[in-house]
Structure formats: C-alpha cells, structure tokens
Image (cartoon, rainbow, N blue to C red; front, side, top):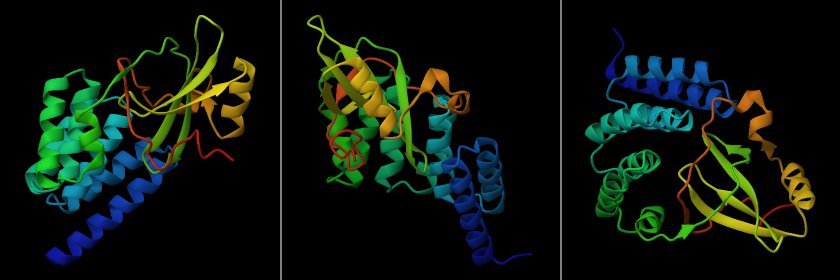
Length: 220
C-alpha cells in the first residue's frame, strides 16, 4: 500500500494533468483525472477546488458549490474557497449567499481584492446577448459583448464568468469591433461548437475592477 506522502504526490500529479486537459478544452479527460486524484487522496482540498471551478465553467453551479463545500471543509482558512463558492452563488442569482461567502473570504484574507469588489459593485446595462469568448489560460476565459446605444455609438464590454464587467472599449463601427475581437483571439460563441461546454454569463452585469488579463487595454 502506498505511503500517505506517495498518495499526496500522486494526487497532485493527477490534478496537474486534469488542469492541462481543462486548459485544452478536453473536459471529459479533465473530469476523469480529477476523479482519480480525489480517489487517490480524498483529503486533497485543491482537487475539489479546481473541480468546482471546472463544474462552474460548464454551467453546473450546484455541482460547483458541492465541490467548494468539500474544499472548504478540508481547508477552512483558505479565502479562495469561499470566494469561488460566492461566485457560484452569484451565478445562481443568490446575492445573499454570495455576499456571505465574499465576507467570509475577507475574514480569512482582509486584502482579497476581488472579494471586496464583489461586495461593492455597480450595475451595467448591456442589451446584446451575442457573446464572443476567448480562452485565456487554465480554466479562465474572457467574454465580450458588442453593444450600440441609441446614437449609434459602438462599445465592447468585457465580462467575466459571473457577469462582472472589467473593461470596455469604444469602436467607430460594429465591423471594427468584430475585427478587433477576432484579431485578438476572440471567437463568436454561438458559431463555434467546440466551445459549447462553456456557459456564458447572464445579466445583471456589474462593474468590476480591471484584472491583469484585461482583453481591452492590453490588446496587441
């Protein structure tokens, strides 16, 4: 029988493999590796945490919350567990439970910037539902919506998975916005079947800070 330290190392290795699969949009393989990691070491809080993130990316908020519950039980002082569970509650439309988790995250990490932003946020009205998406890195993607006002001004809003608007850019026309998105790695969500496992965010949209992976201000 493997020693506990061997099980811990093997479980972490399997999690690393799962994240590679997830980053390559190989969702089924990622789920399989996470399951093996947890079976190898059921005390690996990180496995549940990353699995919860993947379930959320696939639109399974109830499943994500269940995984975050397990991660928090194993690692109750980790602010990230509460923060990501809060994001899942946000996507379910339960602002009360979400804010409770953001507050808990701040108890364990008073400098948690994103938890602070979630507790103090303003609304943004976006009429378009025609999403564009760019997979940035492991388990993370940016969404974009092209919207026009009554005067014909065109603006692209960059949105995270839970409806937080973290950046925006003005364009002279919708065609220019299309070209800018395409040139910088975005693809139209509705027209790409390989992205169907993702679930776009939904209104209400809220103003956020600008994360370092902003897809607007740092375009090439």
